[in-house]
Image (cartoon, rainbow, N blue to C red; front, side, top):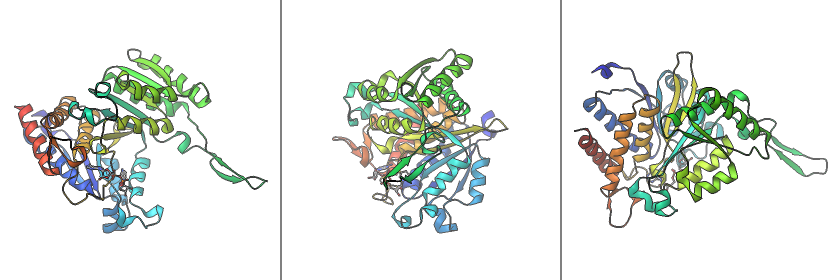
Length: 373
Ligand code: NAD
């Protein structure tokens, strides 16, 4: 029973729209873990986004921000919706998420592209190219061209304009995201592909050099390869199963992770993690969230797919709490339920049974019981 007393502090910020509906199913799974696996979590709850605007007049209160800094992991739903769309940009629900990312210094964004066998036909690629696909894109999230200075639009003497953004990376920024990628690869198939445009960009040349240095000095057992971003885009579509972990900058990661996501079929299936710096106590800030938004078109109907949120919880088990076997259990339960033919509306296929959010949750819990017996 050693685990029973261990401290795993998790803040749940379910947010708006389908966020809370999906999060309800995760709460049932955490209950299952504490009763069946002696793995307990100290859950706390907070408001974010529109829910926080309605209750407290701001998308994230200072108290909730402080709570997020104090816990071991934040499990996030989604924020936003038509009700708050007319607010000024600075007051909108999304600001809550942006503040969390900034204050927690979440510099590494992990986006797995995982294809469950049962859903391989939902991909835009041929079944054989994607069946069994399991790759992870690690995107640098707080640097690069989206933040670099100088930036702006200036008017030239002849009246035409010039738009400027700056791609900039420092050694420590590259080192810390490279370490996350190598570390992850060590828990997976042991291969990292570092992606840049070292052929035409100095920042890419530095990226390549620093990644190699971190590799040679700290992770010599991991296999490292390099690829130009354009070639990587091509290879992701041509032969995605060649990759294990891809590590890349903010801009290329933004594009490549969306491309990889579509190999897997539906938004309702995609989890993500954002990891921060390790603090003075050796703890790493982390936030786990589905890739999808609040789906206002179906919110409140009880038909949302909870799997992306459940798989985000599974990533939390794996990456914040080192509970790999427990994460495997959740992933396997999801795979078995899909193989058994249950589908929410977004992943519905001919001949399968269309079920609600709660029934999908019921089925995953039953599968967990079976796997655990
Ligand atoms: P969305 O992801 O909410 O929805 C896109 C489409 O996919 C919709 O048709 C929706 O019904 C469907 N969908 C998404 N997740 C689903 C699920 N789990 N189960 C079943 N169907 C699902 O994107 P959107 O429509 O562009 O944005 C809606 C709102 O969400 C906006 O206010 C947007 O700003 C916000 N948003 C928030 C986040 C976030 O909190 N991280 C991310 C994206 C969008």
